View 1 (cartoon, rainbow, N blue to C red):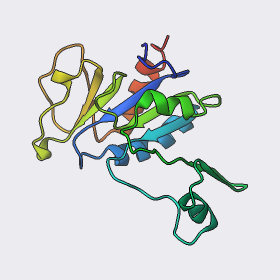
View 2 (view 1 turned 135 degrees about the horizontal axis):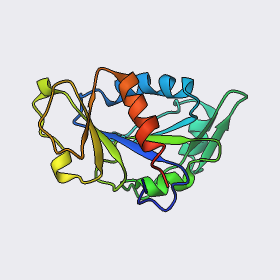
View 3 (view 1 turned 180 degrees about the horizontal axis):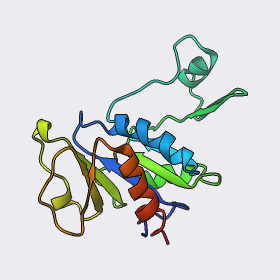
View 4 (view 1 turned 90 degrees about the horizontal axis):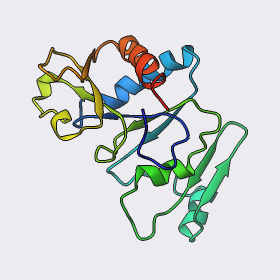
Length: 179
């Protein structure tokens, strides 16, 4: 399975759905299962909101507000790099992959970036009554749903409430088909 991203060095798999469907909830369940199965997982999450990972009053916040960009905050436990986009622009997934250290990973999971061209699993919750995305997105390779749907035969249906089933699909189809 080829990713149409020049900066992808390993498999990249997206999760797309309407807001409120449970993308983050599913990923929080999937990551530990995949890790137990021996995969090293990275994650890129797209946000449509302005967000602040630093706190006003902290040295790193003050330095960034003074104009430094990027700012790297490092401890013995973790590293965070904060880069300002000036002017503000919608990020592209391939550009983010360029900045993402993939050297010690086996798989990058992506939440969002719905309009980009890379393999995705669509999540669908019937109670939300939202339109399905797969008819307009040829990069959707499976649909995780809480109700049986009539879908084309090429589109694998997975149980949205069975993260173990989704993890098995990832390992047996996504990881094994990556060129």
